[in-house]
Length: 109
Image 1 (cartoon, rainbow, N blue to C red):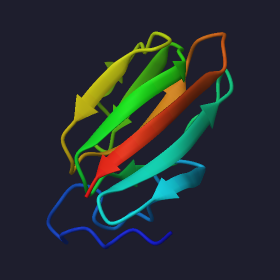
Image 2 (cartoon, helix red, strand yellow; image 1 turned 120 degrees about the vertical axis):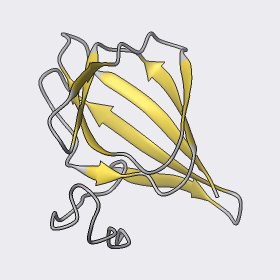
Image 3 (cartoon, rainbow, N blue to C red; image 1 turned 90 degrees about the vertical axis):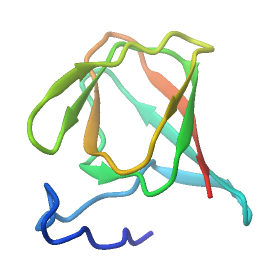
Image 4 (cartoon, rainbow, N blue to C red; image 1 turned 30 degrees about the vertical axis):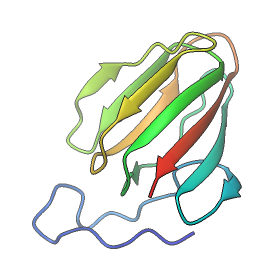
């Protein structure tokens, strides 16, 4: 899936961005649902969310979000936990724990 280009004045404007997750498991005109699986030590590529979204941790893990400007944010996600996030951030997610992380990310169109 191709990501729209960034505003040329925004952080990360010259970066090639990856997808939000590994696989789209459902999509219609209102939502898109991504499957995310990260083994311990594994990370997602740098990506951007163009829609508000929910993350449902199917199997939780200790994660770290790193923003495009290098800021690291602890993002522990317990099994069954749900978080809401606004769109726009360019970041990557890394599983820094010792368990596999499984999640469904639901983009609200």
